[in-house]
Structure formats: structure tokens, C-alpha cells
Length: 164
Image (cartoon, rainbow, N blue to C red):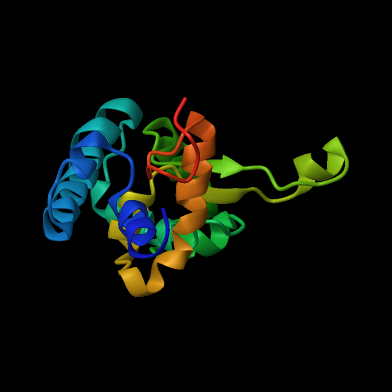
């Protein structure tokens, strides 16, 4: 898979509901509804967060720094959260399987523990929706798609690796 097909696969992501949508507009609508449902229903149930109004903006900030090092003070400051609340919200999003913190590679365990982790979204389609990616700027979500594929042992963006 190369060219336009690869770009389309990255923008589509791996959720079956998204993949089954015929047009980019319908996939985007589904992704937005899915994110809203997670924030309005699941986050409230799992984490007991009362101020849900900050979560959509914070999730968009996290999407914009996907693949970069995670500085909670800086990220929280973008939406008026302190660093402890920002770290808690990132943990909640990890529990919801929207993103994960990835330890930075280092030669020793001590250096790995001390280094600031990077944030990675688990689905390139959700990341694309949050960031507003278009085919022209899809390169930003390609690493997320590849990581998602490698974690699953196959590519949900069908074609990069053989299915097992």
C-alpha cells in the first residue's frame, strides 16, 4: 500500500466503526461522536471527573503534541490546568485506551526512568480527527498508525505488514 491508499488508511484509523464508514465526512462525524461519548459517559464513570468541559480541549492539546515529550505543566497550562490535574487526565485517557505514555529509549534503565515519556495516540483515525489532519499533512499521524500496527501484530491500516 502506497500513496493515496496509505494516506486514506492512516486517516481512517483502525476502529471497525470508522473503517466501515464510506466517506471521510462520515468517519470524522463518527470519531467526534465517539470522543464525545467517551468524555461524557466513560470518563465520568471511571474517573469521577466533574469538570468535563476542559477535557475535549485538553485532548486536542494532547493530540497536537502526539509523539513528543510530555511536560504536564506546559500541557495543562494550555487549558488552565495545573500539572497534577494534567497528569491525572492523561492517566484517565490511558485507561480509556485513547493514548499511552511511551518511555524514551535510553541505554540504561536509570536513564529510561528519569527521561520524560512521550505521548502516543493509539488510533491514527482519532488523532487525525482531533488534529484536523488532511491528506496533505498526514505525515504527522503516520508514526501512530505504524505503532498501532506493530502493537497489534498486524496493520489495521491494512497493508503495511502482513496480517497474522
